[in-house]
Length: 493
Image 1 (cartoon, one colour):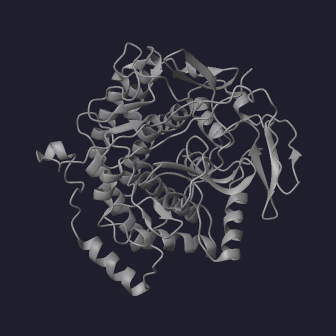
Image 2: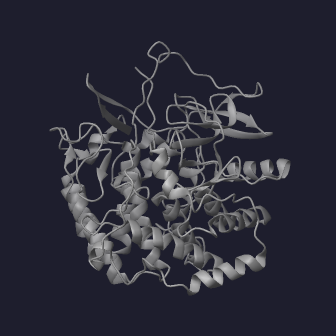
Image 3: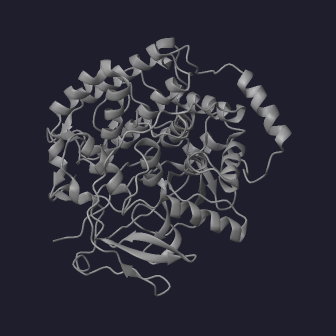
C-alpha cells in the first residue's frame, strides 16, 4: 500500500504584482519602535475612520469600483504531491542526535468537554488597533456576490481552509463588538448559500479551490464535468469545525448548515476511519490518506463534529520522538511530515486543550522560548503565504532529520525564508502568559505598525513579508476573541 500524501497549500504570485503591493510597506520590521512611538501610532490610527469600515457591507454595496488589481497567478492546495514509488514501500526512520524512540501505539479519540463560564477580558489599545487592521482586510477583500473573502489580497480565489478562516474572522469581528450582528448575519447567510450552491467535484464534495467572485471551481480541470481536480480532506475538516461553530453561535443559521451537510457526501472523504483526499490527473484519479501529525488530528475533529467515525486518525502509532535542543518532540514517520505550530494553535483556540498523545503545543512553545534564550531572536515557525518565490512555505520545527527547516510545498529547502509568523506568534501570546509571550505580542504589534492590514511576518533578513492574507488576519482576530472569553476555546460554550 502506498504511503499517504499530505495536503499542501502553494502560493504562486507574480513577482511584479507583489512588488506593486509591497513597495510602500516592505520595511525592515526588526527596527524597534519606542513605546511612545507605538502609543502615538495607536492613538492616531484608532482615531482614523476605517476606510473600509463596518458602515458598508462590501465594495459592491457602496457602488464604488475597486481599484484595478494587478493580475496574480497562483496554484492553491496541491494535494497529494508526487512520491518516488521506489521508496514508497520503505520504512521511513527519523533519527536526530541518535535519540529516536518508538511511541507506543495508542488511539486517542478527542472528547470535547464543557468549559467553565468565561471571565471577560478587555483588550488594550494595541490589540484594538490590530482588530481594526484585520477588519480592513476583511472589508476590502469580502465579495458581495458570494460572501467569500479573497485568500490573498489581489487574488480572487479561496480554498475550504481559507473559507473557514473567513467564517472565523466574521464571527470574531462581531464578538469583539466591531461588526454589527445584522451585518454578520447577512455575510454568513450569503456565504452559506454559496457553499450550498457550489459545483461539487464529481458531485460529492467541494473542489480544492473556488473563485471568490463567481463561486465557480478554479484551478486544474475547473471547466470540465468533474468540476475541478479533487478535494482536500484536511481543508474540509477545518471548514466543518467552523460550520459547527456557526450552528452553535447562530442557531437561526443551523438549518442552512444542516442543508449543506445533507447535500455534500461527507463520508466520501473518510476511509478506514481516517481522512482521504482525491487528486485528478491526466492519467487517473488518486484517492489517498491525507494528513500528518497535528494537521490530521485537528482536521479529524471537524469530522467528529459532523458525527463521522474517524477514530484511526487519532492513532499515535506512526509517531516517533526525537531530540531538539534537549527536548523530546513528536514527529510523524510518514512522507512529507510537515511539522508547524499551526494545527496545535488552531485546535487550542477553536476546540480546546485536552491532553492527548498527539498534542504537543506546550512543548513547541517552550522550544521556541529556549531558542530565543539561546540567540535572542524571536521566531515563530508556521506555514504561511510568501510575497516572493516559492510563494508558500512550511516553516518546519522539524522535517526529515533537520530542526528549524523551511521548505516549499514539495519539500525543497528555502533560502532566506520567513522565520517569524505574525499569526502563530500572536496566537502563542494569548494562549501562554509569561515574559516570552509578551515579547511575541509586542513584536507582532511592531511589525504591523506601518501597515493598513496585518502583514504575514518577517523574513530571516528582517524584511516584512507583505503577502497580506485571510489566514493571518483571521487567526489574530480569533485569538483576540479567545482572549476576551477568558481564554476559553471558541467551541466550548
